[in-house]
Amino acid sequence: MIDVLEKTPAKTRYSDSELQEFKEIIFKKIKINEDERDEALRELQNTSDQRASVQEGGSLTSEKESLSTIASRATTFINQLKAALVRIENKTYGICRKSNVLIPKERLMAVPHTTLTMEEKVREN
Image 1 (cartoon, rainbow, N blue to C red):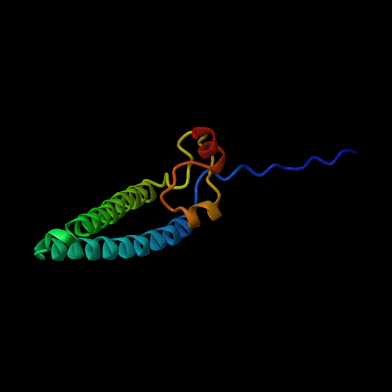
Image 2 (cartoon, rainbow, N blue to C red; image 1 turned 90 degrees about the vertical axis):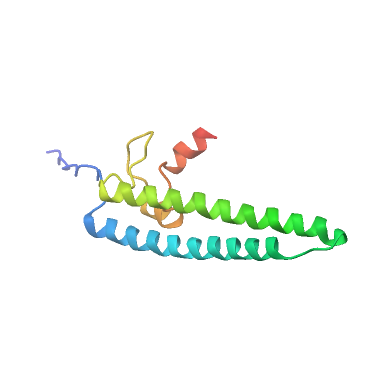
C-alpha cells in the first residue's frame, strides 16, 4: 500500500502577527532614516549659512553635495518604507510582484522594502 502524503497548501501571505512584526521593523528604520535626513538637512543649512573664503569654496561645495545626496537617499528610502507599510495594510506585503510567491522572511528582515524574491531580483539585473 502506498502512503499518500497530504500536501499542505503553500503559504500565500504572512499572518497578521508577522505583518505586525515587519511593521515594527519598518517604523524603526523610518525613524532612523528621518533622523539621518534631518541631520543632513540641518548641516546643509548650516553650511549654506557659513561665509566661506574663496579658498574653501571647493570643499564647501563638495560637502554640500554630499549632504544633499545623503538627504535625498534617506528620503527615497523613507518613501520606499512607507510604501511597504501600505502593502502591510493591504495584506500584500511580502508577496513578490513578479512571481507572486512569498518572499522569504529572512530577506524581508534584511530588506524590508523589497518587492522581489532574490531570484527575481537577480533576473531583473
